[in-house]
Image (cartoon, rainbow, N blue to C red; front, side, top):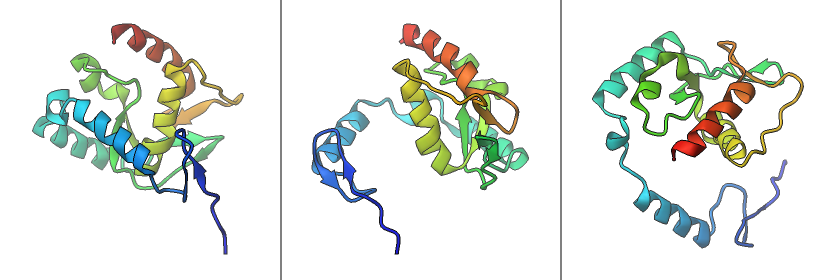
Length: 150
């Protein structure tokens, strides 16, 4: 039977894979309290309708890594370039892509964090979406411009 190794957390705690230690739970709660509510960030009824329409026409995950498409059913509409409150970028459909929950919550967010730290490393193929956008390339310039906006 396969076994996943435990996770070493940044606080030094060792936990089973997928389980948060008390420090991580506390950090997450603090971040959630500081975060602006989703409705104030633009995720309202209008967004819900636009999201549903997008997912009907783009039903599968657009993430392609090392030439292999994900192909899982998409349940999230992601902004390729983080909008950071910019409503023009928020509603720009060329900036949207369908992702499955796994790729939105792991791969894409990890890419955003690495880009913010200036650590994005890509293979010769880069990271592509099914719509033909090379995330790793577009992403670096977009992230650097959002760093200065706040």
